[in-house]
Length: 96
Image (cartoon, rainbow, N blue to C red; front, side):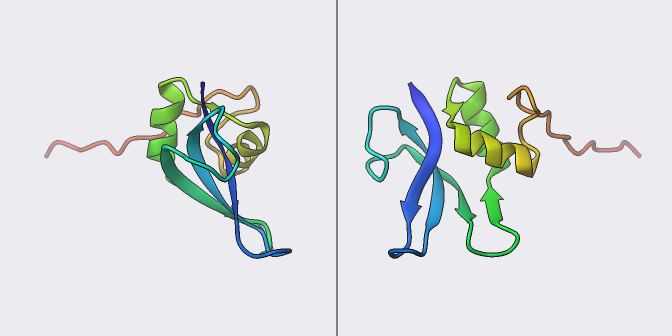
């Protein structure tokens, strides 16, 4: 199964995380499929940068976010309280 999860980066006592798409059986900091965002808990408020288009692609293809990543996605507004993907508004081209 493919999971969207955190990969720890940064020095000792200075955590920084990358949000990656990886196989469930690969190690936490091991091989991953695609890098889709970052999470920095050390700044106030915590900095969360996510490529929403790629996350939507992976979730629609069956990738499951981990509990901590799902919580981050809810904070950003990508997931609703039930864990469903929130529809992203597409820009509408107006005819003249």
